[in-house]
Length: 431
Ligand code: 4AD
Ligand code: MG
Image (cartoon, rainbow, N blue to C red; front, side, top):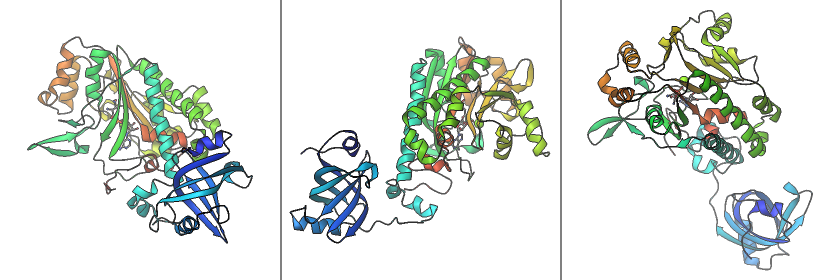
């Protein structure tokens, strides 16, 4: 017999099956052993009765096998209402591939311990569902960009210089020189956009942020794009279309994961159908200040402010025209209102906060140099970025989406670490 995947056994009308997998749970009654077997596609109840299995030595080995041992089983597929999914395998042949040691993960273990044994905890239902949810979100972004005519490009991770700001940079030793891990691929995408117009990349970004919140990682997967011949209005439309597409995509492709994490599909259907609110910083500032009187114009919006701003909305809020002093030098000030920039942060509702940072770039040489002087930055440190403004520069926009942040909100997850296999935080780089 050839191996079948559990998912297919449930889908097809097969009478017999050979399965390979791991013993997720086991119960031992007199003469009958019940396993919940899992493979990469699903889980199935397997019943091992000493009467059906002729090889008594094999049956004894199966009885002794501890949780998470890897096994091969073969037998008859029977319908049984009591079995999860309505089918079970009545095992006739069993072989232990590897008898595992006592599995260290039981019930009610602390979050810290589960992070220590992440290499084993990844087998849990929660982590598996988290990985499937996350994979669906990555896929959705690629799908949107491809359908919209964007070309996928790659940018370096070793860089010299900051994009988002100097104090969140990781320094690494590079053949006797100090270089940095990239905070964002934006500047490289701007270069690509002058060659290919519509480009995107999905890559890690690194931030030495000492924040210990449920939405910060020091290494996160960043989906970034850049569009030539584009202004703020185009960008706002792009952001809205992209997020709607992502919501629609997970509704179609990941209903099991939405259900598992408790996201009601009606909520995402609203995201697909309803128009996103577009508000200026001035407008949201007024809302936030009513609740937080100490907030001053020009202050950055913290998690609590974002929560207040989005509390009356079911769908993301797109905040544009932030104060110029608040945003990095590459953002283009609005010629009608120089104290604000042509940028847009997308805030997810329910306290999930900022998921996208985006904006029109300073594309004129003099304007960029002016902004750099204000920020005390030296032209020499940004030589090629500035140089780009000398040869057929065009208005262009782009942005960055935190894929883990989006996954968290779409699936209503509690913590960003549920979206990544090996989260990197301030005090953890292992496993
Ligand atoms: O707002 P940010 O810092 O914007 C940029 O990096 C731009 N250069 C992007 C661009 O225009 N190409 O980061 C963009 C998004 C945030 O909105 C957030 O979703 C996510 O990246 N992000 C993080 N996600 C997890 N952990 C962190 N420490 C994050 N920092 C930012
Ligand atoms: Mg930001």
